Image 1 (tube, rainbow, N blue to C red):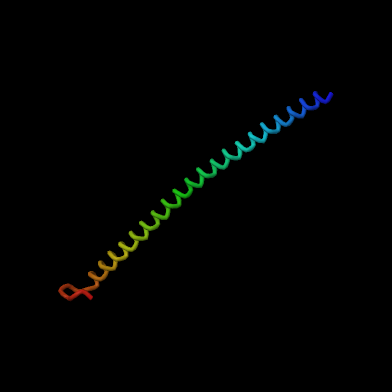
Image 2: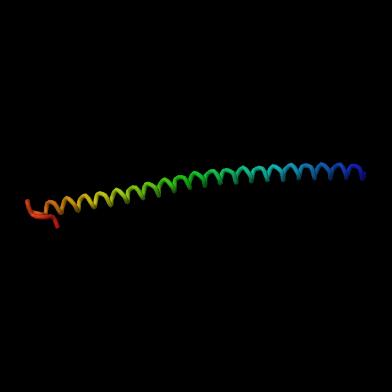
Length: 82
């Protein structure tokens, strides 16, 4: 009877070990998925920030151009620019 109990206990422990190993593997896979998603989001954030900087630079250039145009148009012909 003791031998049967030892065999059953061994089987139960083996099954629990396999289930625990599978759980750990599933957690590792999920963690890797989150890491990949975070990397994609970080790249998107960097691209978005770069686009914002470029838009800011372009806006500044357009403002300067508009200022130059308005200054030229408000100056009478032959008069020095302000």
